[in-house]
Image 1 (cartoon, rainbow, N blue to C red):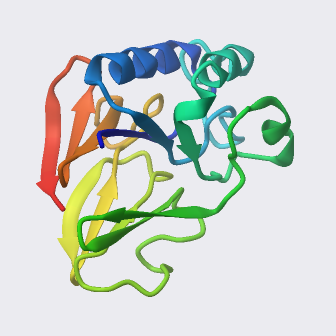
Image 2 (cartoon, rainbow, N blue to C red):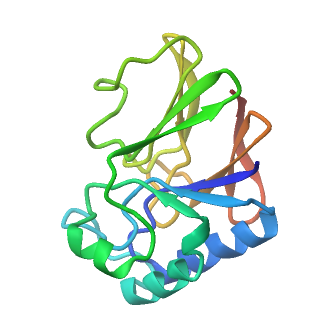
Length: 180
């Protein structure tokens, strides 16, 4: 199954449209959102076309295909308007013989993660910095930020198919790729 993985939309209708277009074009069957879907948070500037209500409508149209975890900007009120669960701190996804621990990154991260075995994957957002590397036997993956990337990175998302995690920009270029 092909999955599209994204983080940190932060209420940007502009980037949500690009994300949904990439989702359609990719042929992915499910979308994994790693938190900070609707709000920009007090430390961030407003993203391009900040319009959480538009983002709600766009994502709810795909509610049967979206799995999400809670970011540090999510609140209970978000669950009242979104038609897919957004308040779990993490989800577990089996991939081949390994386990993917998917989370936002503000609670569970490289310094504070659950017990993981060699080859397992820590998949998170939160930092707005894309990443795909092995560290101490664990694969650390971050698709970057859809709307507010940091450290000079472009806005990005990721695809996971057949054990290959590829981070892509909205121009269709593969920025980084790694095999799980």
